[in-house]
Image (cartoon, rainbow, N blue to C red; front, side, top):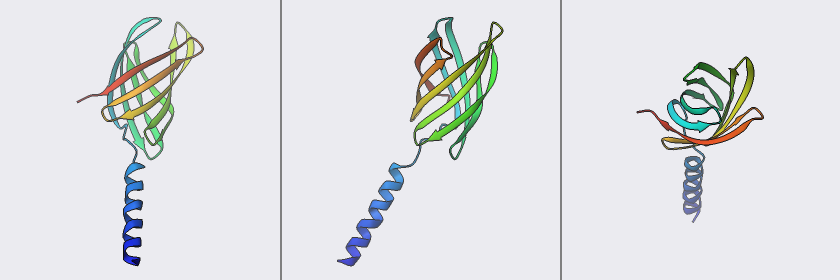
Length: 122
């Protein structure tokens, strides 16, 4: 009986460990989406180290280091600081990693909020 309890506890601990395993956003992701200023083409090069997320966001106008990046389970967050027409714009990304996709919500300053999917580059 005691062996059965220990075995049940071990299986439960293993199952919790597997379900708590975070998806890894590390890699290259590509997205194309419509915005108020037209179609945008982005490549995101992301690197997760524990709960810290770093990398670059590259679009048709250039590349920007991402800042304030975090990973918590399948959820990611980061900031892209853009300059557009001599204006500094903070772009906040929240995303959920699911396999080879990240479903993003992108808040562009106080101007717009956009939703799109980025796909892992092969």
